[in-house]
Image (cartoon, rainbow, N blue to C red; front, side, top):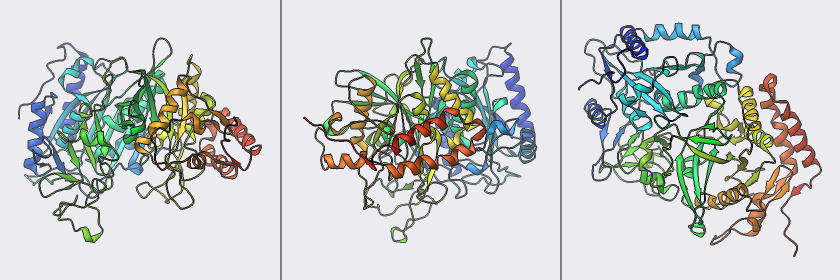
Length: 619
């Protein structure tokens, strides 16, 4: 395979000299057999995919069913992010805060140096220059990742803008250095495993002051694709605080009204709460004259422009989406996005060379190969695809991609939406009284744990801004940063909370969700533009039944709407008092406003009826 070069850097460039010295010193320490400078070309991508097929890592899928696509199975010890092995190595422990794992930077480097001596023996060290965001945008940031994994290179090709055209944008001490190894050296012609990794030892370490990330032992997803959570959230959140912007675990969508008025909204949901589905929503038939477009499905970087308005970019160039549950009913646009040129990890493979996962179809196809690479026995009750199986697909393949998704100036944010998975208490939709109350709602957002999440099932896990696993610094400082950020805005975006998951007394979901969420989104957009009414309730502003568009809805009555918007006083008192657990964790850095906001909400509830409901209008 022809090696790329860094000829695109100016000969006298300090960055070129520094980069060459850095890469060469790593290759020597890691005993890499060769260095490959990635050029980011399609030919390079195709060659590496072919190499992965030869190694047995990739299985080429049926070109008629799934052209240009591949499937692979990871080692069973390497299937997801490893939160307990993820560290923020700030110089001071208090800067990492109580919600992060911290280790002293020197101590961590001592551990890693010992582990990483000779770690790339028998392997190629790949150098990936990449950009997070549209190349050349004032809001984009740049990085260089070194890795010994071809799987990482081809995924980074889809997920970032990568290649030799990035070199001119690299500035000394400004780009993020990302070091990754699977931690599986090959000695004396040893045969490589199909999924090299270190099954017992993994570290994902962030050094915010140095703009450095070091990942050891895992070849999977966000542990290995450094542009994703490591750079775009943990390191970027620190950069955002220092430089006055926000790096958020948010989708960005565009909503176009029948009058062609476009409104952009950023929304944060913890995992398993329908974020990707929301970002690619196809409006229900009663609102088919409205249109939703996708700017991003996972991460948003939000800056102030010269007039003090918020502009958001999606730093990623692809989707690294969860496969199970994705189908033509729940998310047709995602299904269209992955029809070709997609890498599938830990899904099942059909006997005719296509892919399958639980929830894709009601019937389980015969002759499946499961994610362990073994024949699947449907009677065994075992899953064919791993619950965290993924697809990596180019964003440009999404039929609902927004025309401005790659605009270097970003898109203007008119509202923020926050939502968790709550079976009781939290209403369908509520607008915060103001920016401070909205930040409080986002900071105390919680989700009931599911089987896929860590912890006791059904317990409310507080996940401030859906950022708990992705914060690069102290959560209390982060909340203060949000409060201050809004104070400087001449017309701050409105903040809303939503809950698609409220249940009735029989455990049945009260809200149909999916395309019907357009009804909520329409009300939010109209509120932003002053075109919809609402009534004040103890926790914010809520729509009455007549404030929302119910055109062509089936099996959802006025009584159903009343159930999904009723506030139970005692439940809400418990909810507010349970925020103390989070408050006590962040005690020394918790904004003073939060104590008073909680007291105001409690007093409003104390004076409200036991069951606060939206009264019907009297004519």
